[in-house]
Image (cartoon, rainbow, N blue to C red; front, side, top):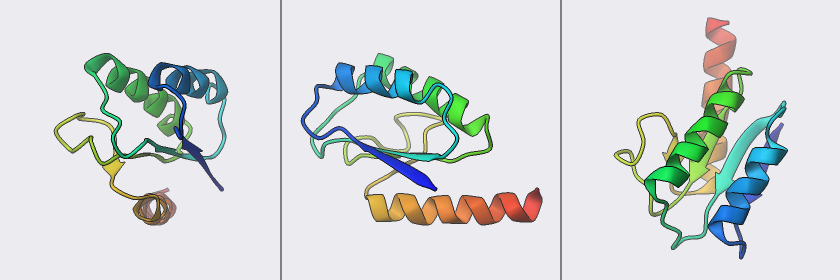
Length: 101
């Protein structure tokens, strides 16, 4: 199972705060979808990286959907441009874990 969290109209700090509290003991793959125009600063990216470590520590996938972030924004975050690509990536990671696990 995969949970998708969309920023929609929330401001960024409230959205990340909600994620941190909700995902502290999460047991499913996570897709975080940001507004198309949402930019993130270094502190916000670090907060996402902390959440990502928690999720991946449970052998789960964590994917960020953003048009403003790219591969240079973070060394650890997996960023894709669409929710469909996020689902595809999670499927690939599940197969990879099954083969290696």
